[in-house]
Image (cartoon, rainbow, N blue to C red; front, side, top):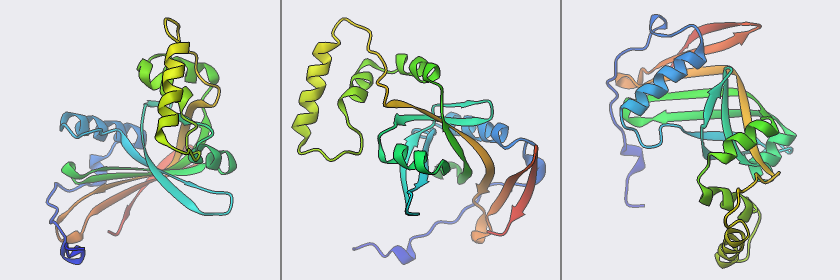
Amino acid sequence: MQTDLARLRREYSSQPLDTEHLLPDPVAQFEKWLEEAVKAGITEPNAMTLATVSESGRPSQRVVLLKGIENGQFVFYTNYQSGKGKELLQNPYCALNFFWAELERQVRIEGLAKRVSDEKASEYFRIRPRGAQIGAWASPQSAVIEKRELLEQRYRELEKKFEGREIPRPMQWGGYEVLPFLVEFWQGRPNRLHDRLLYIKDEQEWIIRRLAP
């Protein structure tokens, strides 16, 4: 590798983050930061890293898109037969991470995932672009496939099958709601003395603690 990674660094210079700057509810605070990320023109501000753990204890992660915040829960959609779907079935505890480099901000979330209702999944599926709807039928997500041409052939067959018809939601496709029990807000600061403020759920109350960077 030509780049000397050990020497790659930048100085953070954002405004301080103190407890008086935070809303008492972390989900409301997250929505505030997300709105600021949208206004800042960040590409896909709703992109988040989702980490899950297998039955044997091996972690895995991937980037997915947040598609809603409802009743204090973070909502995303996927194929239930995918790797993440199988792992969440075995172990519903997961972690989410948002990183907005332009704002020198990061949000880390730990929570418990459960499937959304079939009605809610179908409602969201109906507003997806038609191409994405067909793609949900065509792709056996995370399964090994011999070559891409087979996937594209399957897509064309389904495109013809559903021509002129409303496309129903595949039963293996749906969503998850992640109920958080820990949320950390990170703000970059000079000299690597970053601000880290942590919300922890204590029964029905959120407690805020400052962490050392």
